[in-house]
Image 1 (tube, rainbow, N blue to C red):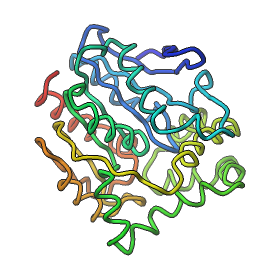
Image 2 (image 1 turned 45 degrees about the vertical axis):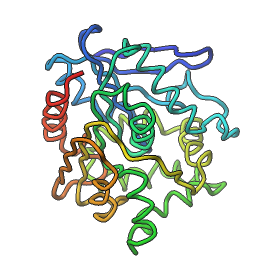
Image 3 (image 1 turned 180 degrees about the vertical axis):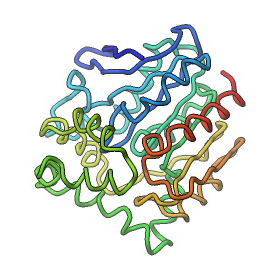
Length: 284
């Protein structure tokens, strides 16, 4: 596994972990909030050994070379975040070829959109912890627990959210990571990326650009694997199980007992095995 700096457009240079033959089928892995490209450190070498080109970027704001002013939320609009992902796929050899997409948390939100709007670009979709937006919206309305699980979405919009998250050497995030099963060494890797005022401000700009509205998307017509840990503190069972109603393609829902929101960090071998099974079943 190597670290590369990939420039997709002027002023946007992303730090990307890459492993595998550059001519092999591409697997693009997108992280979510409070973690980084290091979420997939265990998966990339295994994917490369299995004959794939695997790439995990630090996304917009997480990469210092791709960090527009977070005081301007328009620079973190979801359309720009989606364009970043598609540009990275093209730069890695995915232009004109189908590729496999893996998304977690916010990276999962982007991945659902890409799969719904550009199904012809993808060979497969793997989702980690992030239900389909339609299932999530339904759970927010019908599951009494889901609004509580998602309450951080609102307080991340507060003006003092950044100093709160950075206080005590990121004590809130360290505590949450530990409760959700992330090993301390992995937390250190993530906070080396995220634990500065500039990076944290940019990460929260994703939330501020979106606000509290989750826009609807069509059903997904790409072969999909959804992996959910039943100890996830942000996604309840109703949202997770309801995702099947929004998939019009081969679909596999895998529940990981006792696993939290960050399955690739907590149970890397299990996630890798599931991912490889899915990719092999739906070749590019």
